[in-house]
Image (cartoon, rainbow, N blue to C red; front, side, top):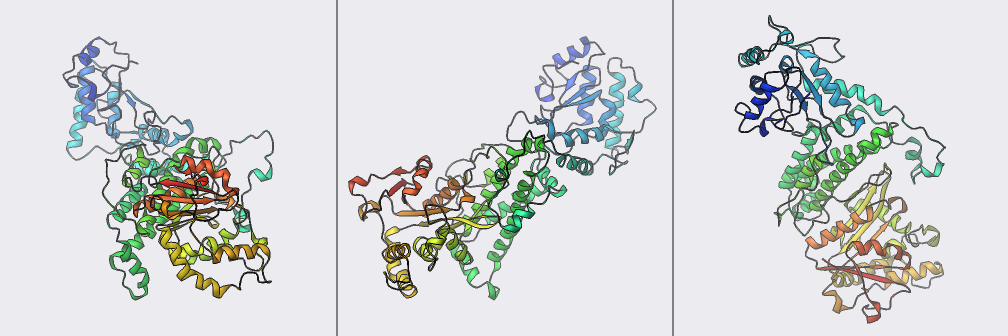
Length: 600
């Protein structure tokens, strides 16, 4: 076989019919040598009978199609799992064969090869001058047969095709329909997902695969990867020129939600008066947001179930593609939460740029690229080296979350460890000190982290720290005075008494002179099960972007000695350590305390 320099129509100069190069090849190349051709372009969406007829007349032989439809070596973020399509089966008598250049990942080419095989099995009924028996002489006979095929197409469509050999279950005898052939291939491929490729040399210790789970989830685990999961996967990684139905639905719904997002005050009014049927357009937006999140959840669940499949070869080949898709749907979901919490959709301050291809790039383009929230809505989280089934969702705090947030605070109040035993009589004391004022007085800047077991973390923000502490004294402390006995009560142990003193004496840790540069502050706590790769980064970026969008110019956060190991993470996020030797604090800092600041 011979690969020409002009191997597709777009490279033929000046055109296929007038190319001196192609004419010379047609006249000089031995007739037994196949001529490779990719179609109109290097990666061709369609290859028509007319285009092959034109080429045939020039090169004087049936071309060998070198098909790049499923090739993904030009973009490491793209994968093509859709069916072979865009090539009518009436091409088959006019070509000498097809070479497919599929995905680089060997185990992921089942659909590409299977549907190509089904396509090759379809041929038009033989005519009195079947091209399979024609001796080519200068390309004349082949060109005439091609013209007759084109004529049949113009006069009402290609004649029905038949499958020459055995017809696979589910395949049609009448015509090659890519969607039906895809379903045939899917039902065969799903079986490979459940064939184990593991041959462990030793038994893994139990603790290596155990996670902090409730008793029900620990014993039951995720359901097996299903045919519906595979359909969703294929829809997200379909073909170079199109996405599958579910992926298109996700993109279209997000565009509608983004363009029709009501203002914050309107949504709040809807929540306050929902029982009166006063929803209108806002009610429709919230309902469609709910349905959109169902699809996002389906993507997350698909990812979780994929991580448990026995065929680890398929898992590792799919892993980073599905991780990217899962992370991007999470970002879309986070953006809707941001709008729901009061963010606004504004025009980008600069042209968006594409960092990845395929569905991931299309989802990224839908997100805002303005500087006020670019950190929140730019996907840059690398997947963990080992596939993990854990999925985390960041969403705005609601009143129903109070108990879960207080519990999270209690279970992280002892240098990140469970402090339940330290507060036997008053388990809500840490919550009343560290989260209660934020959830009541700054709920619009409060976000929770949620996994399959429930709330497992939170990040809380305050736009104006000075005003916040003034409100605590006026609105929060009276509630605390009525809830707890005076400090020093014998009903409390020493730890509880110390915490009560902090509850009753709240104040900013910065001097007023520094509030001009750092008016806002944040607090973040994560349970141990939520301390996975990128989780803290995403939480911090969520609150920083929201604060910046609301006009903040700087932020600070206070760490105790237990959190010093996290300092490097915050430094990578743009924070700097405040020099406490210059009397920067407005009060005496706790021993080994550390304050970090960042301009926004």
